[in-house]
Image (cartoon, rainbow, N blue to C red; front, side, top):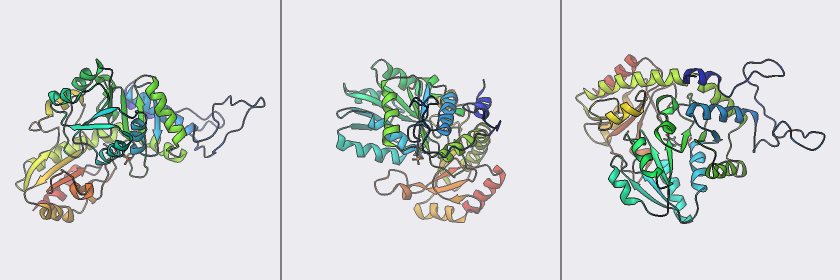
Amino acid sequence: MKIETLSVHAGRKTDSATGALTSPIYLSTTFERDLNGGYKKGYIYSRSGNPNRESLEKCLAKLEGGKSAAVFSSGSAAAMSIFQSLSPGDHIIVSDDLYHGTRNLIRHFEKWNIRSSFIDMTNISNIERELCKNTKLVWIETPTNPLLKIIDIIKISALFKKNNIKVVCDNTWATPILQSPFELGADLVVHSTTKYIGGHSDILGGAVITKRADKFFQKVMEIQKAGGAVPSPFECWLVLRGIQTLPIRIRAQSEAALKIAKFLYSHKNVQQVYYPGLPSHPGHKIASAQMKLFGGMISFQIKGKMKEAMRVASKVKIFKRATSLGGPESLIEHRASVEGPGTKTPNNLLRLSIGLEHPDDLIEDLSMALK
Ligand SMILES: *Cc1c(COP(=O)(O)O)cnc(C)c1O
């Protein structure tokens, strides 16, 4: 089945008690035992399993073409379950440009003796140099945040496969609609479902999806159940509802973003545009091969400094000045100030999350603000 069909139907079933097409929300924290003391229906206590969570996990596994999924209360909790599945002494290789929260999280694991190397993964020779006998995992994010670097998933995966090193891909920005990391060679996919998958700026959530059932994923699932950073049944229900329109939303957002990126590219007050859909982008060729469309995120640098960038952000009328991404409303954000001290993000950079408004209105809004 095609991904549009899966998005509507995967993981869902008609409620056997009532015939309801849309699943009820199972708020119960606990489930009754059988007469013989067993749990034939499979649910015991909501931290270890819940029907809404199970539906969402099945759906996400199908969308990514994986074996199974574990969902979490945030994308960061999902990422953390992977780092917690490592052992002291392990080494990981991470993209130098990535979601700043993931970078900070990795730093927290240094005290548990998990060593990390942050490198530019657009250059393969950089990576081979970092490899050591304790390297257990490679963390790819593509397109990266906030510079929209494109990392070649096929090349990186091939490089590490022969060394038995796990390849993890944070697929939050591309979504399973635009990019299929398992087909390109990755072993695990991570999502912040807070973004495009939930899609409505109203829930926090995360997921780890595995290509195959193995010991490592077993650990991730143990951490999910024992650590308890699980989403509520209502949140699972909302994410599952958001997924039904994911293919349509991401297509509209990608098409609008391409138009807006072209507009910015030709604007005299814009110094540089980071959007993989532009032929001038250094990752354009790889992105064209590994993504179906180029996504809804754009970064650009204003001619000038922080003051000029802030001025543009203060003048827009439709774009909202807020962090996050992937919702129906377009967002504009001065990234360096939200990332805080130590950030390498240029001070004149603004990041856009393109929503579901008409692209012409968004272009007019930016045009007015850039005057
Ligand atoms: C937002 C985000 C995360 C973190 O997800 P939360 O749900 O905010 O914890 C991780 N990776 C990427 C690429 C993100 O955009």
